[in-house]
Length: 346
Image (cartoon, rainbow, N blue to C red; front, side, top):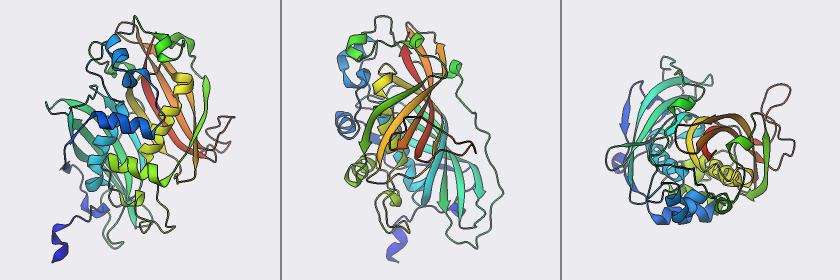
């Protein structure tokens, strides 16, 4: 009877279409989160780095990085959705509705929107739509993701297959610009780059040059910071190869931080259109990144535009910036393919 009070996590057959899960442990964001984020990831974007700069563009109180809020909100879902995951597979339709500031308390709920058992009969894919709200009940972030989850028993019957129809991208008209944001007097010297919206062309690729070598200590500390309890990130017994899998969000934050070199004015992440964790990452891998400009647009806010960017993280530096081979499969070394919108001055 001793195990009756503990949580072994949900397996694939525990999910049902339309199921709504209220995730435990609301989490209050602090200045400590900002400091630790900067200690773990080499971020230098001016808005989350400088309260003075943020206030100069109309953002006061001083927001944290959008991915701080995302990781916290995502971490809430793990004990119920992906504790028994093989891997997180992708994201879609993610929008950042409000800047997250220290003192905000985030809580998350998810709805199961798709299920598909894999042909091996031992795993299945679960799609969920998650919403993070703050202490006032306002939506801060919402997103869809899909994750491969172990079955409790290969003999369990397969559910009816339902694969949700997710938009390939958030439309520019649906991007949420934070209230009061004004880039008309933007300080390019303080921000670290003179390159504005009009300096980027669709199809342009940017090699971000720098790299960061992953360590077990850092990725596990980061994952604990977000209260992400997925076994594969901590427990060497959770994978047949005995290796700790690096949380995919850790790779996203590293790549985003590395993108400063070439995209320093991509100040705010407005939406994540799609994301795929193409290959696993482990301690000892050195992560590099490059970006491709997919679209540019002006927005209805003073001095504000948006870049749609493909951010690619690779194991080792790929100066050729090759995403796919002639067979249309991802090139060797690609770890992450992330399509997102960023707000920039114009």
